[in-house]
Image 1 (cartoon, helix red, strand yellow):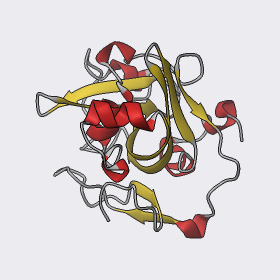
Image 2: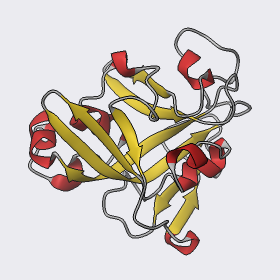
Image 3: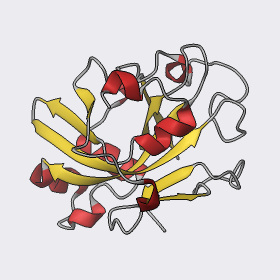
Image 4: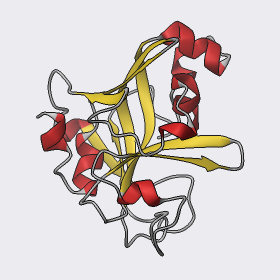
Length: 190
């Protein structure tokens, strides 16, 4: 499957299908890459979705063409990174929760101030910090910009993917919209 085909999936399917794909950022200070090992879907009718009520300046990237990058701040100090799904005009996105780092690891260790490879990208704010993803990347697109998706060598088999409820939220916490690769040590939490 190529990126164009991947981005035709609905947001829930996209959240699961992204597992095993690599996220790559080519920047002035180096190349960063990691395998997506954990995701969460946020659908427009979902009370935990930033687009639940209406389109705003903050969540406008969620309504963009599929593959639009949505970066937002949480807790006044951390950032999260999402990829919009569904059709343009529908506010939905996939939160990239965790990566297994594969390239740029030494630079990630400096950014995260840790020697532990397992602590580099094992959470949404951690991976944003490790990669150096910034607010000015909001509205970029994984099809055309320096932060992009690389297809896996082979798709992750369904029996290797676990589906659970999302974590770190209060509304919509009972929805089974979180996906991760079974047995992967780089996920944020079991």
